[in-house]
Image (cartoon, rainbow, N blue to C red; front, side, top):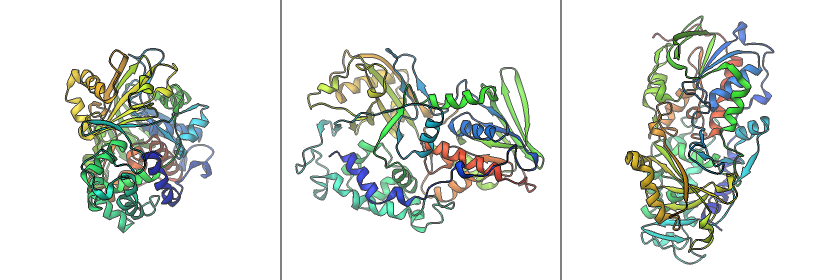
Length: 496
């Protein structure tokens, strides 16, 4: 049994999924046949990522007059599938890669648009740690990691209950509107990092590196946020959308038609008791859009460049300015064959192909999602300091990663037929991979990020417990649509 399977069964045994009450869904929400309260029908949606697109789609279905402003020339935001530079009909996911069987919102819209899912294959994972490449040893034999504490040998996964169980139990009900501040024990988690919590439970530095080699470099993630996401994503089955995950945002965009205005960058948000005014620029110059309500689905990083004359609360303004974004990067190599199936260590496979303590982070294998049945698609998935180090190589970053792949996946020399890469912290419309609250911030920042400001509502993965996931963006969209459907016109604006 693999360590990752042990981990999933551990989370499910804790009842983490069952403990989280189902989040609100629009399916059972009564709504007006046409337009909003008091005849308010005009809505501007800022950003055509999944959160913005899903919001607009559901409002249009309920009779609202919606305009979506998107600065880029494509929909999807951090759901971005690349095909240029790849052979044999290959595609590379620069953003969202996985869909768990617990991602109820994602699965709902995949089904609604008639998209197909392709399951990831399974297989044996290798490790590259401490300069050594190896497989998980047979049961009862010690791991070749000298820094493990004797209590962590011979099975590091046996420490999950000791190191993680109390953290999961401290979460409380993550669906509570005031979470984590409404749960005292969750507020305790909020005051430390994921790594700090593991240290407090006695995990050795080598055990922690072993954990991160399989789960990503989440050492500096807020512990409450990290445990919440770990609990929510504990499904068994992994898949992606056949042909590329960007088929979902493109399906939303096709349904919305010319309501989506591309290359339209928002520069100003103002509001008064009568409505909201959005200033934006496009190819033809500067424009203003006057609407009854606005849904801001922009990441806070680019929102900082927007002039805000909307009477936002001090807490909202503080969250906009202080929310950090996680550096995240991917570097793909497309190969002529799936040579790792004949690896010297044995037949390797599955999505998690190699767990490492190197700058490459984890080597993921998305070959099973490709159109060609023989070509391979591998990539390094990097968080935090790994992503920053990768990006520091500038225009030599792809070449540097390919050299490292020679050690992580022997046999790759002469196999590479294509490639692609992206560092999200360099994307001006994203600012990073996902919202990254610092210790002590989640308690006040999550409610502040979610809270509407008079006629301006807020969506996006940063406003959801499903941080960094498509499911979070879609969940936030349904929450905001419900807000709009039930909102009363506000006459009490904060002074600018």
